[in-house]
Length: 169
Ligand SMILES: CC(C)(COP(=O)(O)OP(=O)(O)OC[C@H]1O[C@@H](n2cnc3c(N)ncnc32)[C@H](O)[C@@H]1OP(=O)(O)O)[C@@H](O)C(=O)NCCC(=O)NCCS
Image 1: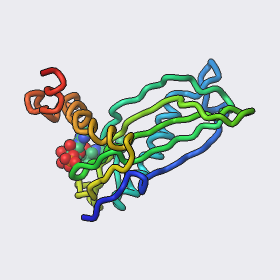
Image 2: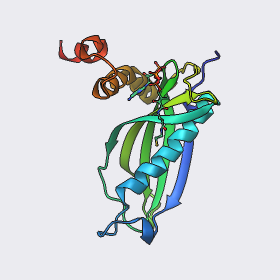
Image 3: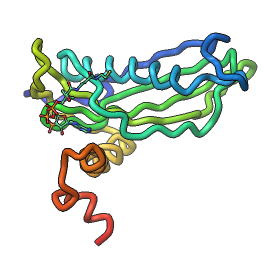
């Protein structure tokens, strides 16, 4: 299968925070952000694989900054690494200052999607070729994140998690 670059799956979702999407502190509700990130990530997975893709795991979410009511929120997602049927999607969340327009990184997250056929069975996806230094860093660390996710899900024996073990030896 022909390799693809992360930028071919780049997805950018820009939206505003409405009152119905906030918590009692008037900041964006965490579940709403998770849903928006899931939507962007699923489009990235589909752009990479050109197949139906399902969320297999939410590997990491850091709610580093709260996002106030009325903020303009931009979610950028890309495939950081593909394996056989699964894809790691890296998501960066930015908020935009109303007056200056300056963007500040608010959050980031990592999701895993799996490409499936019409009956929901995993199918192979294209390999990925990172281009930038950041894409290469994310690619290099993706295998140990996959192993960690599988160990936590009870789908991999910790003894087989070679990349994870290498961190501690
Ligand atoms: C995701 C799903 C297709 C995986 O099916 P499965 O029978 O476990 O298939 P496999 O064991 O062959 O796994 C398929 C791939 O997913 C990866 N995977 C499965 N669970 C994973 C997890 N928790 N973390 C990371 N990767 C995972 C496997 O490593 C494998 O990757 P690879 O093919 O690239 O090596 C299946 O569990 C499913 O359909 N889940 C429901 C998805 C869904 O409905 N999502 C929306 C939630 S509301």
